[in-house]
Length: 109
Image (cartoon, rainbow, N blue to C red; front, side, top):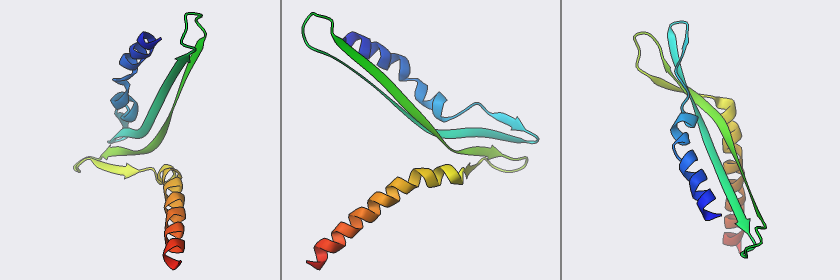
């Protein structure tokens, strides 16, 4: 089982950069390079004896965060996808708010 997991890990290791940065696209006189945040994971397990009982699975996600844009006569600039950035930042803001409220309650006691 461990051999299968290491084989899968070797296959997906180089996927990161090609998943997070897309192929350049020409739109009119501009060049766009899409950028995303991506992650994936795999797991497997068995019962430890030679009966062969076990299983595994995997999954992943990708969130588009913006694009690098090259316009004629200008340097390459990153332009964020504000909707995706808000969607990604909402959980962080929520957790920060909850943590701050607990800290404030602890300081009041």
